[in-house]
Image 1 (cartoon, rainbow, N blue to C red):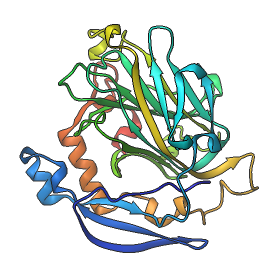
Image 2 (image 1 turned 90 degrees about the vertical axis):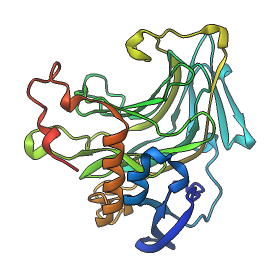
Image 3 (image 1 turned 135 degrees about the horizontal axis):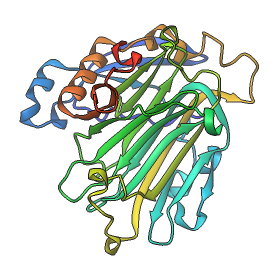
Image 4 (image 1 turned 180 degrees about the vertical axis):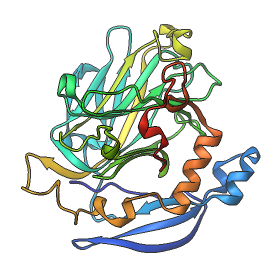
Length: 324
């Protein structure tokens, strides 16, 4: 397991309090104010919402690509930069590309910092996801970044597959330009819930609702994957906007690869150990400030939710009433 650099990226640090200790590391939860990140039209959020961000003392350098990952598709289109601490993915008419973790994991937290394709990226998809690679019964947790025409917001689509069942898409328009700088995208996964984060802001929560007979991914280890490819039959405005190959090649950049979890195969009993930091009580539910940030995203930036799509689901799926 490797620990990446975590930077505040916020204007004002209000308070820091310890929440859990593992080995020689103390973990902290920082409550931040982020007024500079939002325009006046979002004054509602600035005045009411404080973000929760995890600050972890850095005792090692960020993991290099080759430490944890391997190229799975088109090695001519992936270039290691900054001594292997970052990589460049390329998409052109001949090919896209992809990479995957060397190991699979059962529970934990994975994150990467990504800088997406600038300008006219319509018809392209950059993905960061976890997958059990078990075909019809696969578990999968998806971030998919859907390209846009210049001047339009970038949309991130999340999806959850459990025991082969997906169709749980949600889409959020990002509240910043993800092509101008690196931003962190993370998946936190324990026995009780899965949370998708953008810059430490929770944008989606999927709870364990096995009591309602809803499958939950807790038996199959998953690898960490990323791909860049052309999908102009659906990615941008439902396929209405096609890729403009005259702007190729298209580039996306990844760095600060961080995987903290139970490798499989690995230490016996690790996935079931309640003392793993990601199983701690602080990760059983969102904190009050995280919950306010989550609600702000859903009110102001969510553009699609399968739970409210009556054309697909006249009766909402049972997990949709579970809350956060």
